[in-house]
Image (cartoon, rainbow, N blue to C red; front, side, top):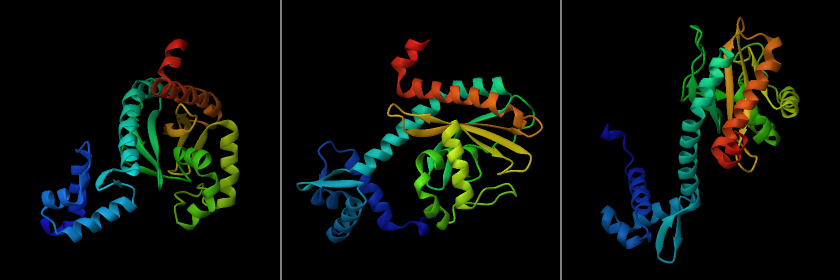
Length: 258
């Protein structure tokens, strides 16, 4: 396993760890001594980390940069979101008889971080850690509509839109029309677009600024989830998304509404 290690990448990780543990930051000389790495190598690694905004230099000392702060915040935020959303997911799964999922935006689609299985014996939803494609998953469409509407052509050229079934919307023009409908009604559907005989419906979760930061999805076989149920299910999913957003990002307002 050691043969697969990239030495300078390992050194960069050690630098990030050392700097993040230091309240005052560390100088090039201090890092060179602690790492036992040549000064020029240490300097080049530091320059790269600063260029990526993982570190920043203040005077002669290197401190945690904006990108590393953001990564840390997102990790803490997603952990808090997942923990506080779980009871709502469980309640939604019971009330709809469908599997409920919590997803976060990802560069390639929707990253599923939490799943509450349906009480029904047939369980078909993807598991935590799965990245669902933008264009043919309900959560992916939520993120496209609310976060990436003006980037559809660019995402298409990157090969991020997949045709999983005959119903998948992979062409930018037809996808934009669907996204406009999603923006209007406030929820997205996957009607056998990812898997045949499976339907999903998703709604956005917003933070205190109103920014979409996650999505709630319910998933079920078409035999359980008929099209004529979309409106009723959407009402439950949208309410769950609002309740989670208030609980996590505006707890005082959520408390006043109880």
